[in-house]
Image 1 (cartoon, helix red, strand yellow):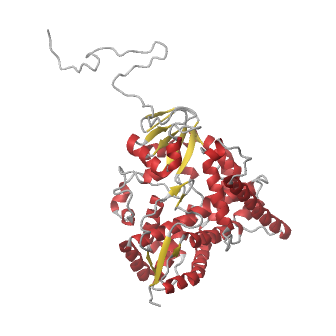
Image 2 (cartoon, rainbow, N blue to C red):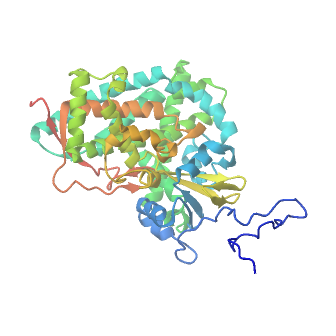
Image 3 (spheres, rainbow, N blue to C red):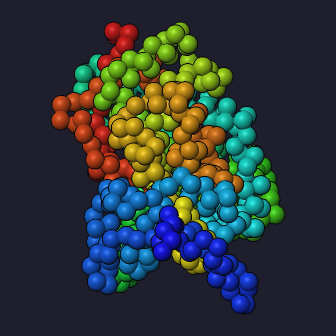
Length: 482
């Protein structure tokens, strides 16, 4: 008998591979095909719906930790595939974006956002994007930075009182009011801030409704005509937005002066009449709460980490030398910028978003059937230990380290990516950097005892407990000793 070293798992040397008589394709036993995504099974009928509903952020992390970067999630009534692998995310957003539509999980967005920038698919979306894009030019961003300086300066009047009294206060309310003023001016030419915080409450109610329309008792078990507190909040928020937009439209039609902000650009365009309310509601919901919460989380983390706070103080003292920052100063503030970047890593503006596959595809070695819903978990991607050292720690220096360039591009995507990247990114980042620089220039931030660890919660955005009525407590001391 002749002995060979042939691996018994492979065909014998010289064997002719099997060939399909119809297509002529050659079978290859040693090349594995794409795997079907696996995941937790959960309870019969409802899958893991209850687990996800209790703590969606933690559940998303557990899915990644226990099942990897492409996971099947049996959510009632709509299962989906969670992806956190950068290679898979890049394929969805850049490599094969035409195969991934907004899909079924975007249907709940329509009740508040209609057919606008966030909900439309590519052909219709391009027309809307072209019209609104000039509202976010570099010159418009400069104007928003100037408005940020004015808004933060006005905020200092009340914060100085808190600093003098050495008394802690809730950070969420002023941060959200600041955002309502800045975003209101950018979108409709008027502040949306008020003492009653009506706009902030309406935004929070709108985003809560969108999230709960995906899978919740309030939307899928209880009848919608039942006058629960949730249903009342939802209807009130919709009426509030409609009243604001109708007022803007009536004022501009009466004067014939439409302006060159987002509202004016849409009114002057040939887009359908519904484009004004649909796109303004979209930008109200997508831009205001995200910016305000990002600022609140950034200042909270600086108060938690005195060494990072001192780095920021040194930088703003050296670069600004006591003067108010301008848009041109921001490029000379890399530590401030890294604080913004790290805040958006830990608390991304929108922590997950879906796409539906039109045709079958393969993502990171996994089979994606046609019509599947793919959920990009930005939150879990940003905390993936395969790409981030100490992923749950606040460490802005990771963005200034030369090794950062070796990280996969789509390991970090706080504003999405590809051609559908958030239109507000050029505005939000400078606004946040300006506000952080100004606050740290004037105050030393500290946390009262017992407030050092706040567990974030998530609907569409990531927010602290008690939001929108509070949730992050902060103390201030004037750095100039006054």
